[in-house]
Length: 406
Image (cartoon, rainbow, N blue to C red):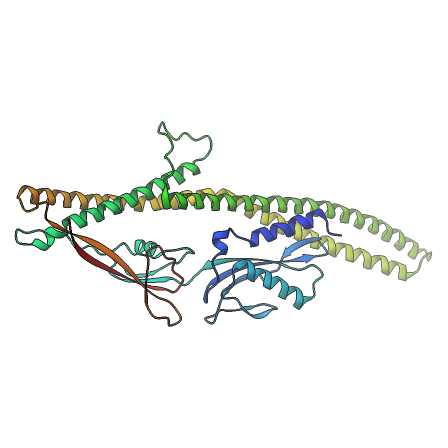
């Protein structure tokens, strides 16, 4: 019958293999790279152990297949990480004939990048993350190219586009302000307990999309922290169990050693046979071997616990560092946009003072279009900015100016 500790371990491995609903909606694509952690039941230590020959990093081939140790080639593209881990558990159990099925946890660690070209400031390849939209790809590429605003007494076209350019800059500033508010709210939530944050009240969480991003970020971080703490508790239980088993094993060894010593004395006096001494010697050697295995298992469990405790300490530090880097970039972009808006507003005032603007002036609106070419030879198609992209997509950004009447 399984011990309570085994049940806890199996349950925790299942939880670690599963991910939140948003992540599970991602289905594997060719050339995705996976981190695989496999564990097998060790009857000697009565615990699950890392399966070194099976664990490691693997990549899906261009045709979407995965070559996996002991299993061979499997069709992985189109599956979620949970579905693939369950498939590998079944295949490993079938191939090895283990009494206790192995446990497999998967994590996608890298994807093909997305490629951006067209009317952007920084075309090139950018790292993909699940759920990335065309608008976010544009942001990574530095936003759309914006020609410098120039005016002259006879340049009617530049006068027409003034209103649209100013509205565009204002919209971009508003969006960055929301992002800055989200980052500051996230940093406030990461503030360590007991540290003074000043007299200012904590920033309010933003609404809309940025508010949803903040909530998802905090939930994901909290979920990861809970899983790390669950792993720590499991490892502490394993260490406690192994410590008790090791003490019992040492007691057995001491008893057998004393009995063997007595038999050797009787043998010297001719009061016992050599076969009995040999049997007792083999038993002692077997017990010593098992004790060594338990000591190795205990050492590995302690190493895993130290690693899990370090991961918990680094979780908030890394999140804080990432948020500060993003906030710094947003602040720089905001400063640049405000400078451009102030310059445009100043020129607008000069034109108004010179009598070059009237209520009948026409303005221009800038429209951004996204054209995606997907890996696999599909024809290019136009997509909305909020549509999710996939690894390997090529996104062409087209900036169109549409002149409309006021």
